[in-house]
Length: 468
Image (cartoon, rainbow, N blue to C red):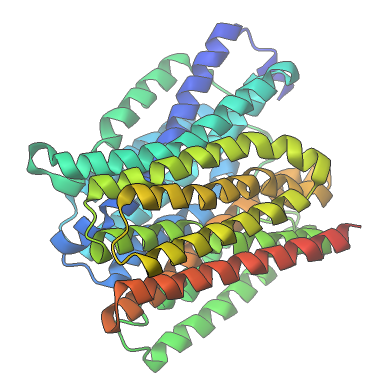
């Protein structure tokens, strides 16, 4: 690391490199949200079932979550520049495949490839910031990174609505994926020209069996939740889920065996005995269960239940995303003075926002887009208060030597929770929508969101006691 920081790279070049890697992170962030706005249109054109709709979002998250630690390790082995460029090229190619997909299953397979290549690309972003910026510049660099990350949500929602509505060249929803291709190729060209080559880190090894085992285990656990309704919860569904539990247990045994042989397991097994850290992971899991699933359900409700056009539906989320960014900027300083109480306050504000949303839908059968946007800013501000300082709070008890592994476990947990929320709460929404109404489905989903956030509060409080 010292060799890289002392490399003959001037300050102006470092900031250009920052622009390149943050642009890739922005592309990844936009893609996580832009699909939500396009999902109802995709479902109609590809005749996709509710399970396939959920899978388009969930499989992307599962692939990314299970491979992101391996992506970081590959950067150490082959150098961040090489792996970053490979990841961006792969992500662009997978995006092209998504846009060309002719069926629900094909789009799911393309999204799997997109998530896997994102797992190569994204870890190199933070690694590059750490490597190229000295301590006195790193705070500013990470501040820019945080702002761009927050704005990606607003851009994703707005861009998704605009592109679907414009129907460029008659391509409809496919443009939301095609747009990544020229953007990605531009990032690759700039990275090849400007990013410095980083030597490999000696002694780093990749735990391929561990990564494959974890992916299979999580797929067996979450996959049946996505497709169970379509097959009327046949007995084999529960058998697959049970096998998923067994595979995850086998993964932990495999990791212990790798550690005994002197290898580098995907996770730091010592962290599993840190009570405060594990309770923090449970809090993060509960919180993120109500994250992407909320945007999926809200999008489906607006476009299918309230018949709000894609453009207006996308713009509804923009004030929410901007309030999220504002809250994120405030939460860091408040968390330093009030600790996890800020997180609990943010969760409470999210529940207030959910209550206001339910009340609005109950009183007004067809609330306008602007009124929904106003109500959702409460939820967005509460979410921003929690999201930014949550990782710091969860990792606060982790030893510096285990910080990398702890961060990887936190990121993986967050994405698995996002996928689980999409699978479980999405399934509840579609099941109630098909038998009763979109309004009833939204009420039930909101109750599950609130329950998940309350669970996060309980684990945060428990974490404070364990850390005391």
